[in-house]
Picture 1 (cartoon, rainbow, N blue to C red):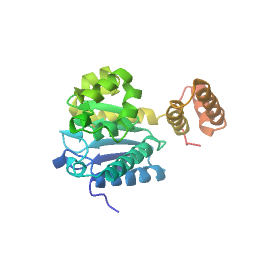
Picture 2: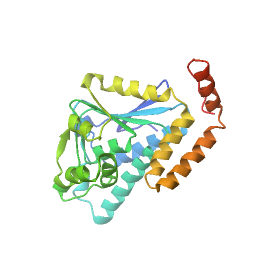
Picture 3: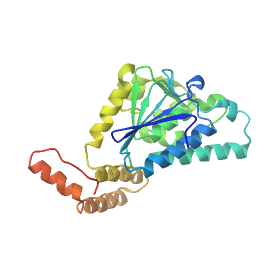
Picture 4: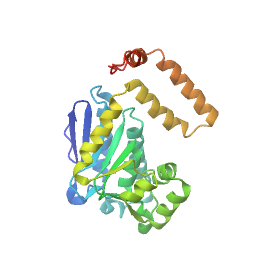
Length: 260
């Protein structure tokens, strides 16, 4: 079934997913959330997809936030259901097992900042800006802002952004660790793809292991996390990719990984 709010393109193992509501600054309404969930299902099930670039249409916004026209009239039950739906979609994106790079091309506010944080890496254009302004609407974040932001930038900086609702520019986002790179706007997609292809040159099983270990390890004690790392290290030692990677290193050539 075709998407109505998204563009989905595939090229050489990379899925490019574009939120396509530029007239609404790509705001997240119920349809966008549902279609993003469907896109994640496609990404998870398609063996041809090795990595993902997520961006917004137009030059003004990645995602400017939730659709206030929907949020403004919601009941408590509707609000909770909306938050749960967004959280589930972003958690699935975060745990899809394939690296996801957010190419942030403008405003990433509220739900947009939360969506960018659910991606594994964030590349921002020089004109991008970030914030969690929900308190200005009498709300708190609903899609993971209070959870992911402190983990990325630390408790104190996260609380300042959450409690003031302030918006920061791309350079400040880079300084505090919210984004990985800041690049010129006309280079955003190329730089995001170059970063992703550099990642995809490596063993796919090893990439999945790193994604799962970091995600799970944040909720474990140090000893538990080390135990999980040792388990994965052992499992990967039985893989054809490990044998190919070590052999290629010794033979001074580029490894050809198969994901097995």
